Length: 369
View 1 (cartoon, helix red, strand yellow):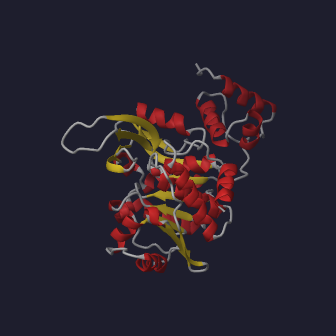
View 2 (cartoon, one colour):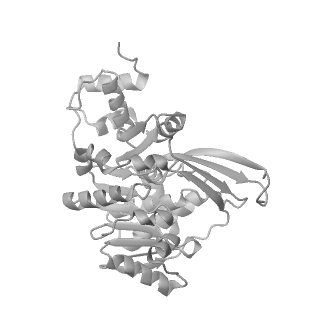
View 3 (cartoon, helix red, strand yellow):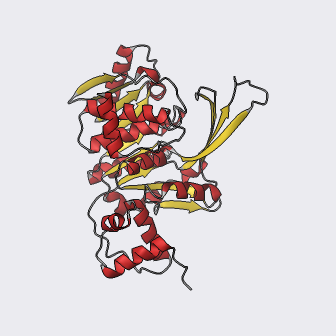
């Protein structure tokens, strides 16, 4: 017996029945939904036995494939000055998070076709993440493991929204192996761009760099934290983008960035390793961006009177950089887009700001200028 369909699935099926060669984009426009949500509905219809295959879907665009963390972000906001060794009055909130997932949602909200490759448990945490994410990205390539727990990130924030301490349970991402990716190699080879965060094991990042190079696909690497810098491949030749922060760059080169000259010198070291484009962010000092063709630029941060929450700001920066680069913008424009999206996210209580769209980002940029 096949499962019952919901109202939206019935509408999708009716449109496919009328035109078996209808594209996902046409379905999305007809129903006023996003393309990733249509992809997820079609996947559901296949599982329910309503569609036997996907021959009707036209290959008309390439997805940005985001690989890495998709976890629950739990935030505990301390109401007064935090005190170690005792109970602190606080309030809590919960959002879908994870570097790869956050970037995928930002890109999905910006109107790009996005797919997520990740691993999770078969639990209520994953159900929460899937419900929050499915409108903005294709989740068909997320592999669930019943014996594992979905990744989680628990942050304790002070009354100013600054991070006091964070606890990360990312064990499930050890299962993002080259073998798992090889099961999706045809899908991967169609990517417009591959973005991988360093929650993935080192051998997986090395595999992806090799795969991207062989297939002529741009690859963006996003470090997650200083300790995860050890997951970077030994050979970085051919990496299209590295978007890193000061602490991560200092940890990798075992050096200290004391001034702007040091900052520029470290960026030049990254470029010398064969990476095409590099960004090093530095909190309130802004960011430095560069490549060998256009040179190196410092872009100041935007002054914010009140930070609501720092979580997700780095991912907002990275996603706007990726989006602007894919749109063919100059390095300076790319860094500006990252800066504005990060600043707007700092002023939002959400990990991914809810008003984000390509039109809104353009308006934000124009206001900045």
